[in-house]
Length: 114
Image (cartoon, rainbow, N blue to C red; front, side, top):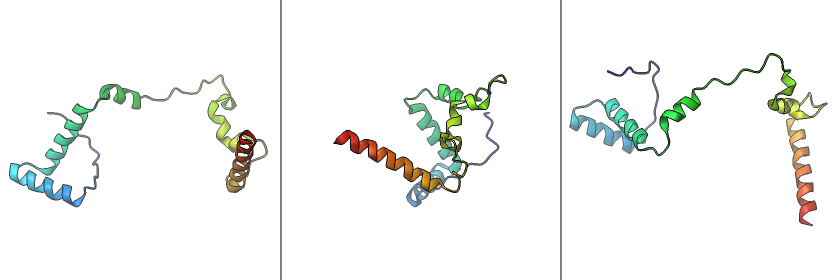
């Protein structure tokens, strides 16, 4: 017997789905949850993707940042303070910075289109 995940999963069904599933479960004498499991098995079995490979890929732990490298070397560092010196107030002034970036992009676009 396969073990079940200990964490419940809440699913919101459309009313017609519930009504039809309930009727089918009662007709077959099976619990609704078993029909839901069968439906999931069907979706997974007919999926064109390589499901075992996806499970491995999405369950990988990210590689830790090397101890001998400073955090500023990370490509992700550019998003901190939006990569511009002097923007330490980006959390409170984000609209202003976003407007400036959009203005720059618009000017570049206008220059290309003229």
